[in-house]
Amino acid sequence: MNRIIIIISLIAAVLFAYNFSIANDLKYEFGGDASDFIHLGLTLAKTGKYGRLELSHRELVQGFKNGNHRNQTYKFSGHSTWRPPVWPVIIAFCFLISGYSLGFLVAFKFILHLIGGWFFYKTLGYFKIRTIFIYLGVLLYLVNPAWQIYSRVFLSEPITLFFVTLFIWSLVRYLKIGSLLWLNALLGGVLILTHSYYIFLPFSIWFFLFLYKRLSFKNTFLLGTIAIATVSIWVVRNYIVLDTDKLLITTSSGAAMAKGWNKKVPDLHTNTKGDLADETLVLQDFDHIKSNYNGEVGGMKLYQEATMNFIKSNPDMILPIIFKKLKSAFNPLPETARPGILETGRVIYQVLALLACFVILLKGSEKMKALVWGIFFSTILISIIVYSGFRFRMPQSGLEILIIIVATHLVLEKYMAVRVIPE
Image (cartoon, rainbow, N blue to C red; front, side, top):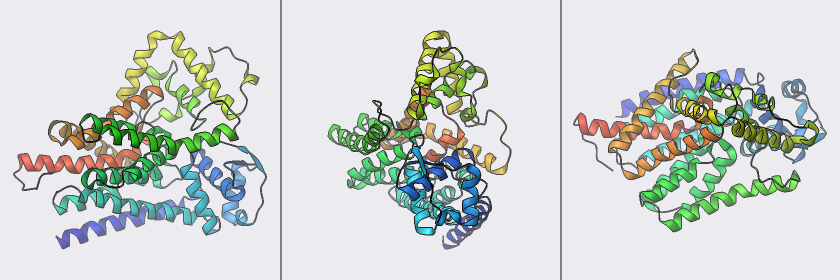
């Protein structure tokens, strides 16, 4: 066993070091969504306000290269709620303690993943399975191809994976030993504020645990209340700071809806390029006066109203669009080519996860079934409202690896006569 542990550790260490080297080399080559997160983190560190500076992308990157961000003063240009707050807050913290070093931010991300691996190890320890399964699960978690892909850029998916891991750890801990219920609720709220794609996941899992009578109504209500209260802190901030009558988590929700509801979705939507869709398509048949929709909140409102107008005007497209998005969401194979060994590895993980989910639904415990149904139900809801895809589902890979390990244990126990102590 010690030899196996050493081999697993060496494999993880080599791949981890290699991936860190690549991520560190690419640290100045960020753009798009990653640039938004870095900009928000810098603004928060410099001004204490969540928003944007009067700073171009070129100036943003150059300031990190020459170290000017450490002493430079910038003018605050306005508040923002386009992105959820947790990742920018972490970025700001890293900037403040490191002197605005992107290298430190890269290292911090990797340290968080190692910590996530430890919590994943503790989670597997609550299941009475052989030690080799536990170490195999930790290896799969640490070298997760999807994590490797997104750890090389400054997107929020790797950090969301970390909080998904903490959420599952605290939930399994509570179900096994009955403590820290409040922590699971708090982490559910933090998870939503890390990536709004997961707004339904905590509630879906709690709901199915309640249906399976693994959570009492009182505790289910308490979990939901604490999670909502946690998210509400940010919602109230937006209500006050943005001076709006809307209760919102992010103003990007309008554009996200428009990407998932337009005339080209049935033909062009895929699980690999959904976030690249053109949200302006819904505006083509929507009569509006652009000056009536000012700022981020106005833009969100414009896309929401245009999307609802599209849905009302095209009732015959509702079911085809829903079917297309659900098919893409649950398809573990890429619907457009994604070359590379990491992409191939990600697909293998996803295929195994889907098969493992069916094994759990057939032979798993009620607690594990609740986790699977929770993933399915939350994916259905978010896919219908906006859309899903490989990038957005990456953070749930931690939960999927847990399901793979437990399902493998069940299969080997039943069909290969491997003696593993059941749950």
